[in-house]
Image (cartoon, rainbow, N blue to C red; front, top):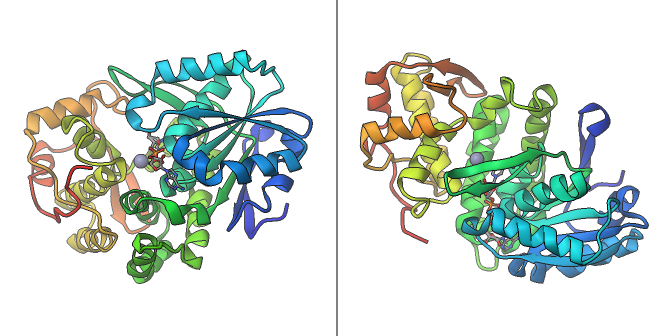
Length: 379
Ligand SMILES: NC(=O)c1ccc[n+]([C@@H]2O[C@H](COP(=O)([O-])OP(=O)(O)OC[C@H]3O[C@@H](n4cnc5c(N)ncnc54)[C@H](O)[C@@H]3O)[C@@H](O)[C@H]2O)c1
Ligand SMILES: [Zn+2]
């Protein structure tokens, strides 16, 4: 398959699929043809992203022999709920979409998660193509088949595993991303370096200032190196998901920093930090905990903090009650029963899952401060 960088394949038997990487939508028609020719395509997007890229994507789907129709979702995490899902499914039905329809998710993780879940549920499952347009969605949420919406009781509590047929990544869509979203997605990029790839981490140490400056400039530019970095992140996720599709064990390493991040997000009522910022704070706390437990040296904590800060991300843990943080860990759906589980770094490129840690070390790891505070302003 033509691609501006070699495509990747997610290996899941009959549910295997390609990830195509390109600097434009020119290759989308060829990539999508096998799954859209002669079929109705429900292009699910929002006003902002649809306004920027909807025409190009619909034109490619038509060129591939599909019949494209747009469905607009409201923007924002607070609308990632059952009500929005219901409206979308009713919309599919009103439009006469059949079992052979293909859902095309065009947008960030919110659109991808809702559209993916709608594809899993509509007529007990129709095909789905992910066309992610945020850095977070390109390196994380569009790959791996997790879909879902939030419930009042918590984030992503209703959902399904539904693998897409194709993920098409056009990294140049990142040129229109708000700078804060670009930096937040970058936290997940740094995460891949720590959990699995020391050379990637070293490359990020060298190139982050230039990449972030270009992404946050007006007008923004997407540096050539970023496409290959995104591909590398997807390759790591593909490898992990290929070995553990349903999070039996290994897939948990993708949650590095996330136990802390979810607690920070919940205890600040999802109003203060975007997800990637909370992940940056969470990775710093995890590294401090690992150092406190003697699992890694203090130099790792400092190196990771320098890289996060070079990307303009915060690292300081906010002032929260220790007991409230512990209670939030307990509510995190990824912790099992009363056991606390943390993904902790051993060295750059290698993490370990540790259960039930020492409370004194945990308290020290999330002591307020101990890092950089910038980027804390409300949106
Ligand atoms: N399914 C998974 O495995 C998985 C993994 C990680 C995160 N997620 C989910 O992803 C969601 C977060 O996704 P996100 O960070 O992409 O946020 P998002 O989807 O809310 O997008 C952020 C903002 O950027 C806008 N936008 C998107 N692409 C743009 C572009 N190219 N140009 C200009 N504006 C653009 C969006 O309209 C939105 O306002 C969360 O709901 C999270 O739970 C899912
Ligand atoms: Zn994340």
